[in-house]
Image (tube, rainbow, N blue to C red; front, side):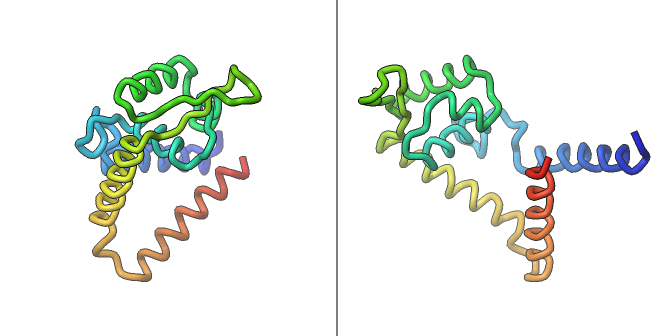
Length: 145
């Protein structure tokens, strides 16, 4: 490894440690809710898709199939989701939020937005733009890989 790569690795690791603590990702329950960060993210993904399948969640979030299966079973017991049988393929079970599930996700989104707002509310417009541009640049660069 070259020095510039080692420096970048050190900076990324430092940022990751800072960011995960800052946003509370290491807490067992995200934002003081009964859901973990992973569970919250799965709920967000289900909300954002009309016909998401468990295999899609595994692929998109890079999670183990059995782990996702356990979380989905928990969500079913909590009446957050339902699994429908597709008419054209009985092996496919699209996942959808129940009314209660949608209410829970809406509350999670509101809490997340409020939490992020608390972090940024004192930034001036120039700082906000620089941060947004930097985050977009980072996402774009990693998408290229």
